Amino acid sequence: MNGTREDVICEAREWLGTPYHHAARVKGAGVDCLMLVLEVYGRAGVFARSGVDVAAIPIPRYARDIMLHRNEETYLEGIRQYAAEVADPAPGNIALWKFGRMFSHAGIITDWPAIIHAYAPEKRVVIGNATMGALAGRPVRFFDPWRLP
Image 1 (tube, rainbow, N blue to C red):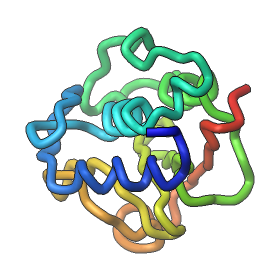
Image 2 (spheres, helix red, strand yellow):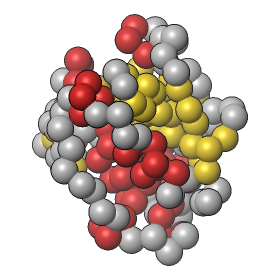
Image 3 (cartoon, one colour):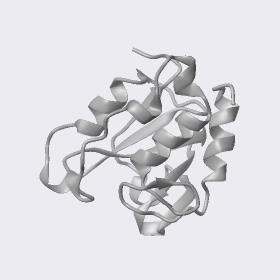
């Protein structure tokens, strides 16, 4: 893949139905929202275009409920290293929501408010609507990995 927005959305769709599994990153077997983002952008070639080896990105251990007992914005700061924050959502960009004390849940924008995300309540990777359910009304930030900081 060439790292285009279409490549990202195509790769993300291939993960639909993959079971939710904390800290896993195996298509069809298990993935969480962080690992879905890493795998999709890595396989779509976005990081390679920028000389970033997705396998070399350090991922510290994180608790499934980290957002309930930690204040450090580890997810937000991690995304900022590989993507530029933008004001408006665009297809292929990352949406990052605040749950609990920190920004801790991400999805890949297909056509805002439509997203693809590994969502624990659904127990799998799904197409979601960011204006409905638990995502509606939450603080959300958008990141464009083609505009590396």
